[in-house]
Figure 1: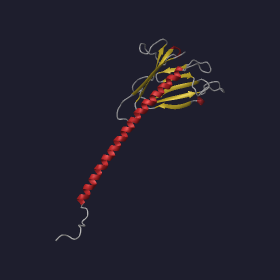
Figure 2: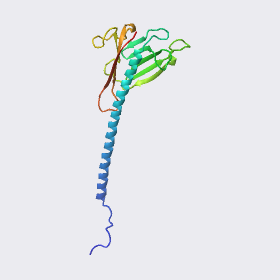
Figure 3: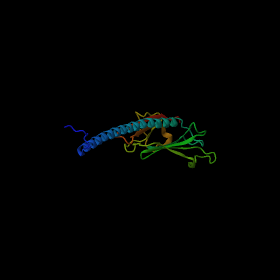
Figure 4: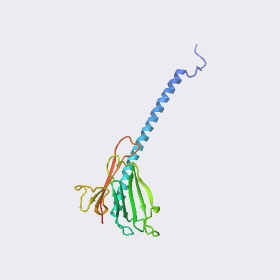
Length: 202
């Protein structure tokens, strides 16, 4: 005779274990998918930042060097010219007087400082210096590639040898910049290299 009441035994232990196993596998697949997507997104973002900001820094430096001029006190436009550091006087749109600009590479960080002319001390007072981080993840030092190279007047970057550094400021007629960036949090070792050269109007 057929049973008049439904089977109320419930879920067996084996069925429960199978359900848990399937859920665990599905959860793992979902986590791996989102992890892979996030890592890819981070890599793309880091590469875009390296390309955009690196290009912007090099372009700004080129413009500032092109606008080089004597200081407000009559000093020569170039103060220091070394492999990973340059100091010069230039005109910036946000300042009424000529400012002193310094770029220097410290390990993997490129810094920039601006020192305005002080009417009080009639000098470029270091106390008024504004320092910012221009860009990080620079690998010039690790790659043994100078950030800046300097050439004499009437010389060409492709046919002449660079001046020995620190270069004599009055000998410089052409400046090149090579900025190498390796973005962090990336699975590849791709470098982004940004270059420029500018003839000094001195």
